[in-house]
Amino acid sequence: SEAGIDDVTTDKSDVYVTTDGTLVLSGAVSKVGIYSISGQLIVSETVTESTYDLSALANGAYIIVVSDGIEIKSIKYVK
Image: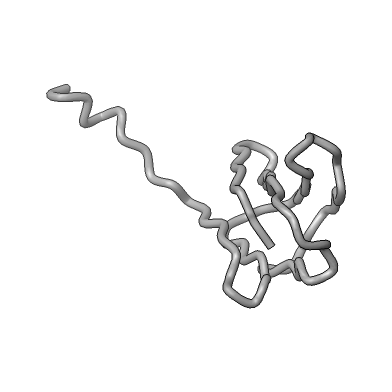
């Protein structure tokens, strides 16, 4: 293949936090883990909805890790 064109993959899931503090999950996400910046596990839940409410978290910085059983994705969130 030229220039690695065959190596391109399509990301099938998007994960982001809205301005009102809702984690939006698209795709087949099944687990959500929320960690403090120091690495302490704050929340670990299996989810079936396409959104997850983050309003109960205290102000601070977090790493949110989501998994669909195959792929793991992490994002930084500051509340």
